[in-house]
Image 1: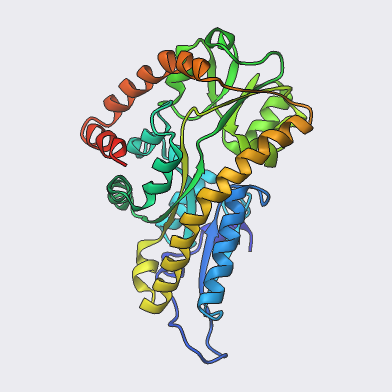
Image 2: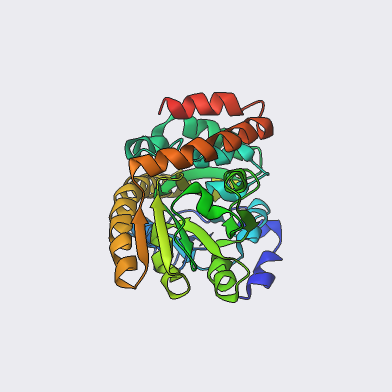
Length: 333
């Protein structure tokens, strides 16, 4: 069914789910999951493995249908589509909530929450539960957090972006109005660009430089349009999986338990998959001809000194009620 027609389905399409039955004639419970990652992206592969795990655990009684690369809905359509029940589930990188839920950008404050073990512990933390509660106010239910990166790459075609002054006048992919504060602090000109559109913007000259997960630079083939890359522990990104609450609450307990168990496994596996993929990605980008700089501690400190405070200040202005509490919770993870 065409994506636009699917989004026009009435709310009832996502309200209830059939009960699990052992009889072969009984229809499976269906969970349609929309995401923006290309199939080769490591999180896309984690989601495929999650779907297979649900099928195995339920003996086929629960069918997770994963739609990658915006096949079901565009990034901006995922939240309203799930909220009104056009389809059951979708994902969002934490920063794509932008101004809608400013608290979601806390992990992306430059050089603030980048430790691997912090990210490994996050799905079971009080900070995660705090963010889940905020998400629930937006008519969707958060059900999983998949660690996606703590290794960003700043790509460019003209010269390597190594020192803060190298950013002056550079048109670069922006993330959201909050994170862009760090880019303007070093003299860059950020332009908000959805991930699937970045390579085209770089190729056409709309952008001079890109910012993405180092693994995504491989899966989205940044090496075809950019010569230089600087790998940095700039921020952490997680992929939040969320569902329609009415559909979720209408599930039989057996079906919900199967999905929850498979999601918990996916949360654990995403950490190791992310680490392995990022390590391999740096080598692959070099093999594809990119000149890669991996930041030294001194370079990290130079960037942090300029980039972190403007974002931290802006975050606290945007989330004056919950921001300080959330930062304390993240520090405690």
